[in-house]
Length: 495
Image (cartoon, rainbow, N blue to C red; front, side):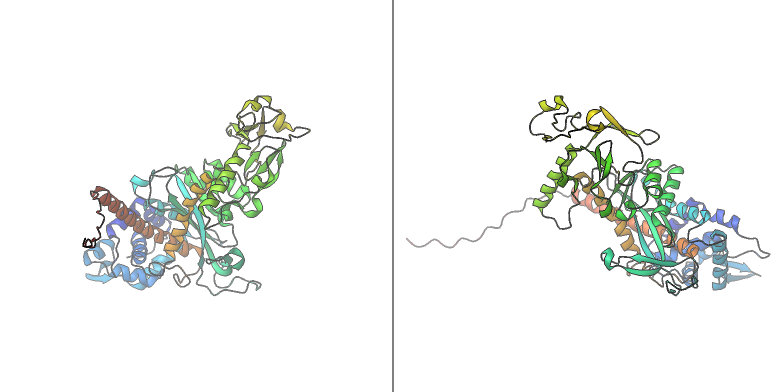
């Protein structure tokens, strides 16, 4: 089966990433020169994935030796040896691959990628994105999925780690609820997928960053560090869309590092984080916002819509969230450099009527009215503004009011992350289930995953362009008015 992705495109990506020369500098210099260099090895890994083959060293050898003779000579697959042509052997593939893995691995494996390995994967995935699309969107959908190790699983309570020292037991849902999930032995793969900005033009759903690690490590913290590194390189993230698995993390490992680099969170909240969670100067902390102390309790208990909600249920839910927004304290001043922000009473912001703010009682009666104001008004009711520090709602604070219609529309973009996971686990394409890779350790797994993401991005680009061309052709075709078919009339009755 021939690769649908041109070799020239894979060479362009590999050269643009600059990883091959950097890896070569880390490899030991032997007495005899190696026939297979890092650049050709990476191309062989990508060709094997483009040809829907598993991540086996034999597939690298097959992919490279199946190239046209001219390409084999140019890439060093066929070289001159004592005046005769010598074709690359499997042992040579194994040797170069082993040297590369040793150069990128940690001296003491701990279940996380080394800085050198993470940089190689970052550069490869970034190079697979065309220059014209690098600034097309700043929004990213985040998710993690399971990758089973080739090693035989060891009992969870047994001493030692078995043949793979970095793999461990993790939990996966496998299409079911969390309570019905199951355990697996291997690694977590985290990916950040490009999605369209709010009210922006459609973009292809490309994997922009990936990382992998042992389930014993927090996957949310690992991805947050990678995204912070992306921002440090000059690619500042915008919206980060994530599910409650990320939002429920300790703020110092997810929300706070992302806010520090300018990202805005759009995330589902864990059931344990929804609703009222204490007060700040009298204002109720709920769902990441500050609300009037007299906010009706049922409004504060609103949750997201259930799947399959009817039109009437959606309309009623949107009306309730819109009413809840009137009780939210207004933002008098945005966050400063230290994360502090000032809020003002919703009555002072002319969103509700309250006797404690006489000027608000002149508002139209279609605004909610506080009938029983607090007997001893707190600071949020008496002061013009109150100040909230970065620790207030640091876990749940996000771009849109949760669970409003605006939040629901923005959060719907997260399905791109699910489609990425489905694509790399599709048995008809590249199925990363157990047996896809037959090597131990995190380093070879992550390097193969990076090559897979390069290939998957090229497929996504081709599919996106095909849809764009189809839409353009459909728009260019003139619309013809369909004639309604006339039924034959029965003959008129004789007079």
